[in-house]
Image (cartoon, rainbow, N blue to C red; front, side, top):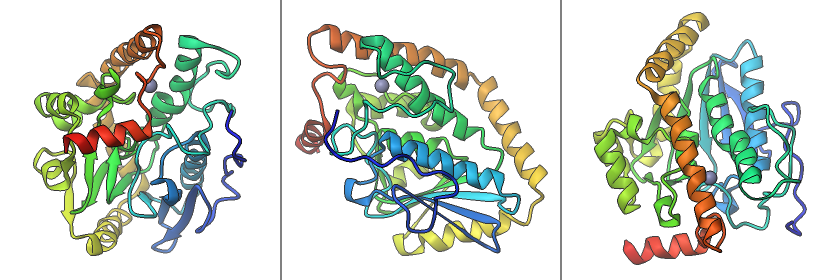
Length: 300
Ligand code: ZN
């Protein structure tokens, strides 16, 4: 248990333009909802409070009949440094009622049972739930988008990045085959996926554009305007057309095997956590936020 006082997740009614850890506001006469990661002091590292607040923000946008398009963006220098594995507000030992999976509370469990219960809900389950939001969601990415940050961006429908954005999934350093929402081979292609996993190297917004992972790259000071202009076009479309178009492409991705692949890889992911723990270390292979950062710097 951490000593830090961690506030409960925000409910849809509590969300506002300045709320932390997730802010919410609308534009374009209410047709566009901005959902903003707002934990900038920790590079928007995702603890469960942020995850559930983000879910509440998406819930609010889904429930508001005026909202047709959602933009996920971030305050501060970076989009997201990934899952919270080291801030004072890390809340691994806290349970909030499950919304994405019908599974038991992880906090009174141990070992593999605990990890599987938690990650089924807050990582794989949540990202899949968000991918199925019946309104288009655009990821607006700047700065770092690392590991769990990729999961947030990839569960959106498409990505618009600024030219300072960079991406990586370095968790092979923990002996783990990529983050829980294993879309890598689908969004990057198998060979690029292997390269970024095997090296843990950062790739740039320009590379991500070249590989088809992002739709547009623009200078940082043009990012807001670019996303707004795309959203302006999209809100002209009927909600049914947007929803069903999204559904159709998601069905195709699933027919290409993405959902089944994620289920299979999730098993190997948990094998890795357990193998690490069985080796006498912890489930992250002895790595934390600091050691992950310094091994990235040594390499880069
Ligand atoms: Zn995991």
